[in-house]
Structure formats: structure tokens, C-alpha cells
Image (cartoon, rainbow, N blue to C red):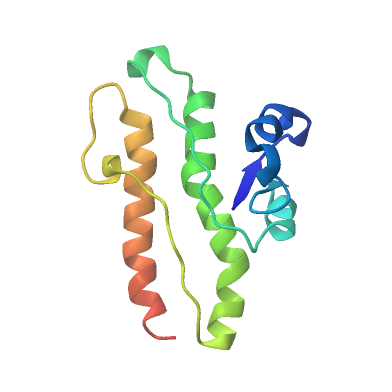
Length: 134
């Protein structure tokens, strides 16, 4: 199991919770899906980055909304841009995408999160058709 986090300086609570499993069945890796170099360094791990933003839209800033989209949607896009060329070259591989039911049905006060997951769903539907050629 790989646990990823943007800031490894904050890993101590996770290390304590992992106990004897740390280094045996659990490794902690640095990964910031908003940083392409970080992705390249950690590209062999599973992508499960995400963040939410709950509340009325008028209480949220555009910057907060951009951060959700950058993490939940563009983070996935960055990862796929890194791995797809090699998968196409090899003509093999699997992509596992972690999404949310809110990519299909939005709920109250989760407007921006739902929008980011709708973007993931639409992107992946299109990508699946494209990948059939390889």
C-alpha cells in the first residue's frame, strides 16, 4: 500500500498509525498532483488524490474552486499525460480512476466538487473510446 501526501514533513501521525506495517506493507510517498515533476517522480503509484469544497457557492472563492478543479480534474490529466505514451507504445496496461457518485449526480452544497467529478467522468468516457484504438 502506498500512502501519498503533498508534504512529507506532516507524515509522523501516519507513521505512528501504521506501526509495524510501515516499510513492510505500507510506504509513504511524496506526491503533489499540481506539480508535474512530483508526478513524474511518483508515477508508478495509484492516483487517488482529491479534495472537496462544501457550502453555498456564494461563500466560496474562485481560488478555492480552481484548487478543487486543479486537484480533482487536472491532477488526473497530468498523471495520464505522463503514463499514456508508454502504455500506447507497449499496447498494454490498465488505468484505474477513482471518482465519485457526484460525478453522476450532484448534491446540495457540493456544486464545485460535483463539477470536478463530472469533468472526470466525461474525460474518462472520451478517453476510454480513444484507448480502444491501442
